Amino acid sequence: MKRSFQSSLLCLVFSATISLLGCGGDDGNTNTGGDDLFVGADETQQEDESSADPENSEEGNTEPMEDNSTDSGELADPAAGITKDAFGETADGEAVDIYTLTNKNGLVVKMITYGAIVVSVETPDRDGNLGNINVGFDSMDGYLGGPPYFGATVGRFCNRIANAKFSLDGEEYTLAANNDPNHLHGGEQGFDKQLWDAEPLNGDDFVGIKFSRVSADGEEGYPGNLTTTAIYKLTDNNELVVDLSATTDKKTVVNLTNHNYWNLGGVGSGLVHEHLLKVEADEYLPMDDTGIPTGEIVTVTDTTLDFIEFHKIGERLADNMTDPVGYDHCYALRDREKASVDNLVLAATLKHEGTGRVMEIYTSQIGLQFYTGNYLDGSEGNAGLAQYSALCLETQHYPDSPNQDQFPTTVLNPGESYHHVTVHRFSAE
Image (cartoon, rainbow, N blue to C red; front, side, top):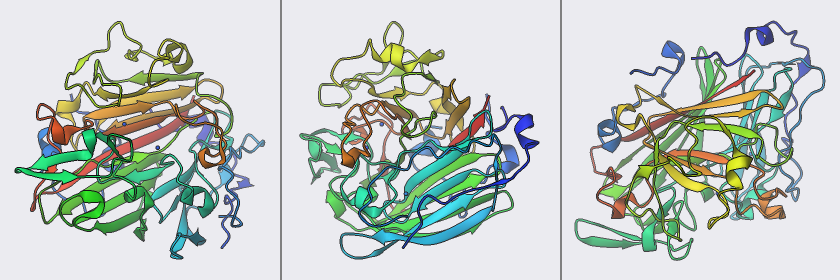
């Protein structure tokens, strides 16, 4: 495993000050850090399918969090720790807070209690200049406008469920068809549009936030009271850890993910075409014209889905201009049968040659949804970003699993625990 910073970066003089971005008021044994990887504040033993398959500024400002790179060539003097500020209010007048996490190396992650959303992620380029690489808004107005899941914790079921319905033990459950005719990312009022409780976490080598909420029986059509915890940690190994867990009092289905939109060149720097991507998968899930898997798992060989070796996204994207107009595909990870919360496997590596930034993704999940921001349209609700200005790499179970028995199950029973972990490791070269 490579370290998150080259050793030369560690010798830089820490002189600049990290500025808060306005705090006023959208599918062998690999150890990703040994003892340095803290899996969860109250880690639970996995009993479900995962064990078997081994965003403050003045109100009204909806500008995206931009790439605020410094010009000094030095990392900022890190005030390591956690701060909390007011961010705004929900449509119902409930207060929303923003937490700023800063690690000992100066990396900064900002999150809000609405949607357990990652607002921004600031990492250094090869010269040590900090820049925001994750799309978000600097006020609640942007999020209340219904953006495409920027940075959100998505549930109860991420990705699509065919015809917005599924059955459990002979009983049919009808969901919101918010991606007509299908159900997408938990529905009209999914986890991304809910207010979460938040608790700061401090460890020897990390700072974090433990978000929690109870999704009531019948919420968005799903059965069971689902108690959900989403722990986000920023480690001193320059990792963003996403630790998602849930329990239920009634049989249900669960598939949680984080929906960050990345641009390693910096948000607002342009399109993702020059990014180099490598996906640790030899197979993917073909889908119909509504984005539902056909049920097959087929080879990526001789297709534009082949990212077994590094390829520039723009080169492959030009050959993939079908419907959808870009990538929105789920990969079956090569090492999915080895994956568990105790044995995270490498899912993908993303590089930006211009800045030298690198992001590696490790996960306990079996699938990876690659999405190239196909429906970003430059509008205010899309943070003013044009099509292909950011990309998503979402770790998850397969789409429409509740309706496809040949896929690993996403059913969660009372007494069982859903638990998955994904690590984003940042470096520069």
